[in-house]
Length: 94
Image (tube, rainbow, N blue to C red; front, side, top):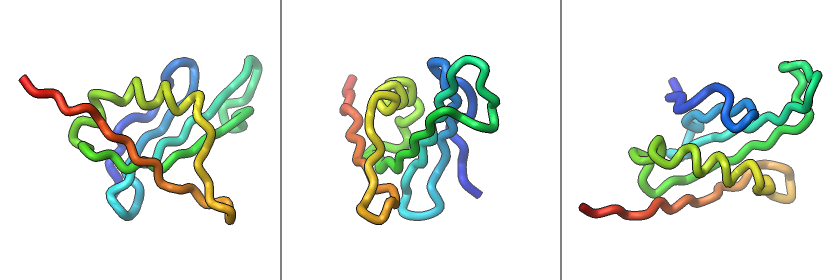
């Protein structure tokens, strides 16, 4: 069963983040709603497949990553399938 990192509202958008079914990837789905829009019919929707170099630290950077994805364009192949986006988290040493 896929682990869900987050499911709820973030920055005024419905966001769902969970493990992808293969390849140690994380699937991020962002739904945009304008005023007076039914929750089951978003005005716009984006999805991303992320490969994160330090997945154990994803929760520490989730807000920043999702905020960046709000402004990003989906990465898709010619056939319309999602392509993987690599995310490199900074190394922090104390």
